Image (cartoon, rainbow, N blue to C red; front, side):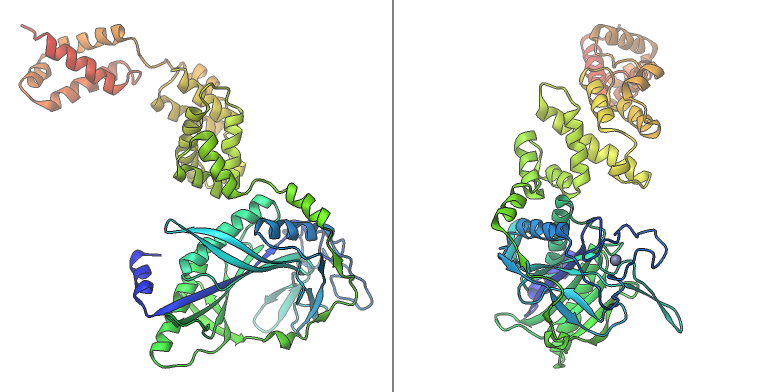
Length: 497
Ligand SMILES: [Zn+2]
């Protein structure tokens, strides 16, 4: 958010209140209540279906244990309590994307509740309350045409985890930060692909405003159709300003569902928001209640992978990385994984120096090449071992920084090992022998009397010209600052006669 917008919120006499409902498809192999594969991404419509997910009468659903495990893992990572007893319920509503006429979800006894997620904002840690994490099933996809709609049931029955936050966020920026942090955790846990643009991770937002100091919540609207972090923030900024303008004009804000229209940058009314009683929830009679043993919960807790905050702290303590570098490396799990593979491939005595170099080269040069080629770190043609090899060559003084960048470009393009490229190109190590360098400098001084005289007459530019001549003769194998030092020493100590 631009600073001036942020200030406008602070100055305003209204407080913004935001809560998010995040839906994530789970990365299970099969669907929630049947054995159909969830790998339908590139499949023809209605090819990953069976009587259960088609909602045929008389079929019996069977609970996917892995989906329960993933939901509990997420709940644990979000500091939630896991009750020993939970159940599924039927959520009834007549909409064609629900083949059965109801969705199997969880109503009053979800798999978990009462957690929190800390986020960093303006240098402060804010705890955002997590109301509950529960499990349900995804719906079919409707494909709307001019005069008719088609339905693809492939998606129907995919395990869908819902993470509901408390209305604890106070700005659109906080909502975005919460969403980003949550996505990081889901990806680290390996339960979600985290792809908002593909709809496997979705976010609905409840937003209201209230006069500053008032405890009671205002009338909220629910915003849908936000498919990127940026659109979450933009949609909420728009909606907050819309509500504030209405309140100032003395108009009444109605509880409703509104859709974000990315191309126009506005929210538009979709339908009046249902109340929970409209859904007529009742316990799902075809599924047994869930009895979650504390021993299983502890087993899952013990097996949780390292989460972003812990990894960040470790990168700072173990590798001595700056807060900023550690942050960038942990934000995208795959980038951190790559960094660790470079470290694992490095056999060095000073691991902190290597970590700093690896982080620098990864975050500047390698990321630059990835962007230029529009590929992700997961499909980086330069292996972590190759980057480690390049850093070895630099450490040993076999090549200098300028040469290393060229070698990196070639290694990235061809997949060849940097050592092989250095060999093939016949690259020479930079000249560090002062005697050799001084001989070149003497030659340059002899052959450029005018520039030498200019320098001695006080023209600083002449020195740069002479440095350039030495660099040219050494073909970039010498360090400019060393050349300048030695050149200056020669010029200053022995005036020619
Ligand atoms: Zn099925």
